[in-house]
Amino acid sequence: MMSCYQLPGSQMRRLGLILMLPAALLGTFTFPTHVQTATAQASKQNSPLTISADVQEYNANTQVATARGNVQMLYPARQIKATAAQAQFFSQERRIDLSGNVYILQEGVNSIRAEKVTYLIDEGRFLALPQSNRQVESTYMVNDTEVGRQSN
Image 1 (cartoon, helix red, strand yellow):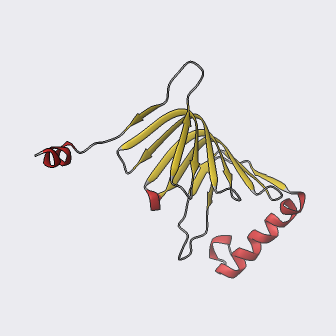
Image 2 (cartoon, rainbow, N blue to C red; image 1 turned 90 degrees about the horizontal axis):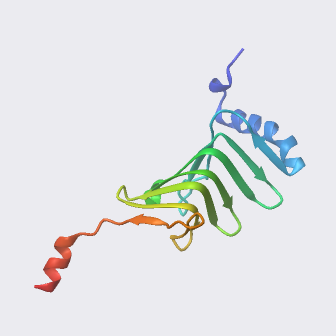
């Protein structure tokens, strides 16, 4: 018997569709294994955004994907890495809501720590909110040599 790893790509896609079809008909499905990964499909105008978590579910009616538990988001095209307790991807609004001890690292140096962060994909903009009676913390690397050159 051939393992699923040896199946040609077209048969793997059919197998995936067959496994997903009953759940898609119900409108919502959950992937309850250790770590689940969802990656957007790449094309000439698109770049992959990968979200890994303990549990992920997708609601086909609202087109919202929810990831819970040890969430990790990678968006290499914009050099973004993030961790959180939960992430929700609103595909129609092109928005990602991260919540629960959110930490975002961009370009390997700039960072944001907050309780809730909304990432507006098309604008490349973060909106961060703290816990009650706390603050959002951001760290940005500033090149002082460029400032020194402009003032001379």
